[in-house]
Length: 76
Image (cartoon, rainbow, N blue to C red):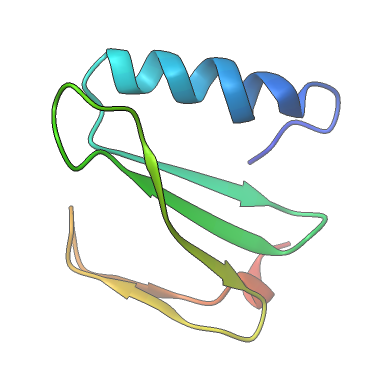
């Protein structure tokens, strides 16, 4: 969940640190915008690329890293 008081840290610092740390995906949830942004690293030495932004009313489904189906409209 993006922090209301420090969203910049989630959007920049954590994104960079997680990529450097080898985390293959970074999911960011914006409660205010009711969106899910899924970032992936296509190559180990590259940073994240925006893979998909899912808005409320849309369904996101994936099997990686596990099977899940969700709609940001369901986020509190």
